[in-house]
Amino acid sequence: MTDYATLLRDHVTLNIRSIDRVLLQGYLPQLQTVGYVCRFLRWQRNFPIPSSAAFGKIGQQYVRAIQRFAEDHNIPRLKFEKGQDKEKTAFPYLQAAAKQGQDRVVLIGSAQEKASIWKSWPRKGQEKAAHPHMDWGRQMADIDHFYFYLWDQQWGGTFCKTNAYAPFPIWLWLNGHEWAKPQLEKAGIGYEALDNGFRSCVNPIALQEICDRRGATEVESFLARWLHPLPSPFTAADQKAGYTYELAFPQFEVSETCVFDRPQAGRMWFEAVIRDHLDIGRPDQIALFSAGGFRLTAGFSSVPGC
Image (cartoon, rainbow, N blue to C red; front, side, top):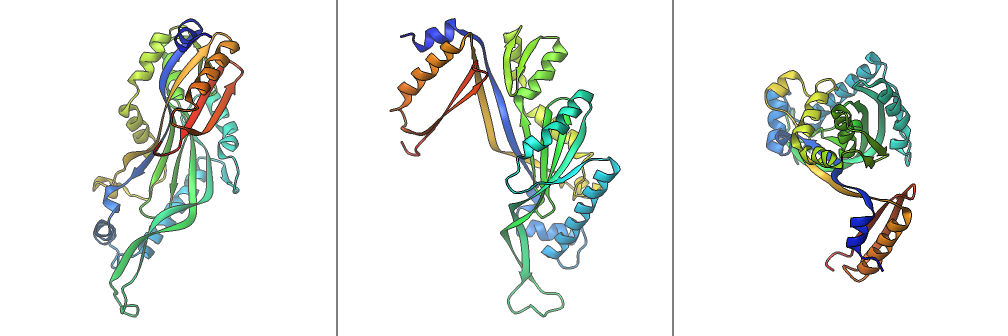
């Protein structure tokens, strides 16, 4: 039987390793502790009593700003139902924007989801005091989240998610393959695209170099480019005082694409991988994904500790 090396050497027409889907969370370090929270409300926003009610007023202003933003820019708004495929719903809006080729918000959706939020309550024994001392804690709550679906000339279709509750986090979803495609077009390099990746490229070496050079600078540029036009719970004075987002990576995927010259070669490779990995790590789940019979991706998950 043909071994791995022979299959990959003689029957692969394109082999590319790239950052794939990335989920980033934006957070403000200055709103992660009780002391910082009280400082923000008392000294930055001048609330006489730092409390979650004060944050509620800021959140209400933020929601109204989102509503005005949608109206002023004629952006459709949708309420996502439980279980609704958000990506599928937003796809036609992103597809229409792609044909126009301009950066813009194509859809604002909302959905109720769980999140960790700041809550305060009067300290025991001070419930009736005119100016009670407040105790603070983080609690999970079902709250509305807002999805800003964006068409970006550098990153293609993506979204930014946020909510109107302190500490006002944001989430960004990006796709490394979608970033590489416009870079190829700028360089005049021909390629054939898959929904999430590449089927062929006239210059695979240049494609790999493009994928390799994508890094933090491109992500930070995206964030800076979109935070300015989108509504924010933070004023210009807040931002000048240092209330700006830093990024963390809850999800980071790296993809290696191997395009075989014929489906039979791909199946031979996959069957060999399955056979040899049944006893390595004892996978509790094995999945097969196929795109047109030409691109095969194997996913393995192993039992922790094995």
